[in-house]
Image 1: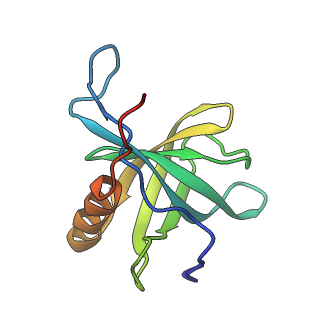
Image 2: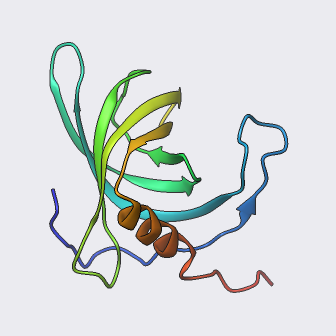
Length: 130
């Protein structure tokens, strides 16, 4: 799960989104980081990959082709471009599901990893659109 690969692009800060019109209490960063997740539902062990597309203080947006159930608990390993160390989220819970987009509530994560995740999401910006 913690293997580094060279086939991904770096994180991209697309925009800062506001909490207007949703239940979020703070700003979120939009970007893309590859991740691997694992967990267990009632009948099987789940191990798959996806893309983190949204980051807030208490949650992560996940894009994956894997079907996940509301309330499911997952562990996440998030790849950080240019770093030999991945970021670990020891416990995240599926808060909402809309097709292949899933909202995860962060339940347990080391403070150091939380800071590294915030830096990874905000380190590279998109050039202005023409």
